[in-house]
Image (cartoon, rainbow, N blue to C red; front, side, top):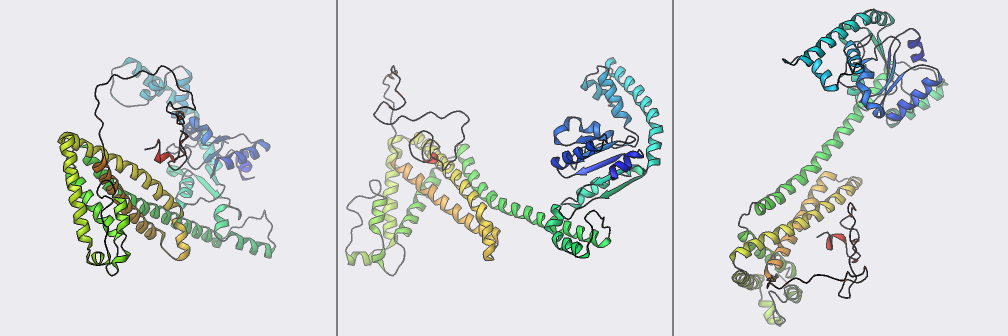
Length: 476
């Protein structure tokens, strides 16, 4: 009704909506009343600047979402510059030439100078034509801004209001709010609705009180505060990952630069052994609780044999963790030197870089997935009166330490047990018969080829048909 009233007297109207759906719903209502209008939302973004620029013409009705037409002036009576550009486009000028015509850069190009002359003629012509229309619009009250509901942020409401009354021009703005709107429903709308029902107020009766305006602004402030806290929490969550990322990327950068990582690998071997000994031989009081057999099985065939770590009660009581640690570290150093002598220094350095990089990459990808899962459920800790950010930080760094330990162990095992097969220069056999999809050629099930573009989660079954998880099979 407000739009129809303004349109009848020639006053231009700009209706702001919060979503594309609302703008289309409002457009359908205006069509039923026979009111000509323009709709500006994400579906018609190509012509948004032109539509907004002409929203100030006499009797114009424009429906726009809050993001549309930013940076475009709404001039009362119409925008002569946009009308001149549209005419030049109709006359066959290319878009680049029109842009040059509206510029002020020095040029000797006769085509550009001619285009500027034509633009100046059209601009002056349309300015004279809309001068009378501009006065008529001002007499009608200027641009009328209608907001269909309040936004979550007062800043967006103020931007919409600011469309009216630009540079001293007359204008009006009014917001229409229903108690069923999202903002009112979240903050006290039901209580106010019950009060209106008890007073017998009709649904279509407008309520204009300072108390209501104050309550709406208070709701917006609370919602802005809640959104700010959410953004702050996201930043704090990201800070945890950033610190971990700096450590991992620093390690990768060292490898990619080709730096000598031999000392780092040796430290990883030593630290890994210390950690495993502490894990299997925990506690100082009861040595019988030490799982020396488990430690022997863990290092079997590379640092231990079947005859190692078999003690009677007296020997076990006198045993110390330091003795076991020193023994394993001495064997690891001897095995490392043997590998280096066998492969050569150059190959050993390259092997260290390849093994370390592969281990870091695999475990880091798994860690990112695990941190994402942790973040998804960490907000439930707030029900137990725990700060989700603090809990995420503590558990995240505990998971990071576990990942670092796993990288050390995998790197140590790979470096000390790897076997390099040398190419003896034998001729490569060409495959003549193509194996069928069920036979891999050696009696095993052939792996199915992955289709290009197929996305597989790291914890999903591998599409090759091996039965393993993707990260343990083709995702390595």
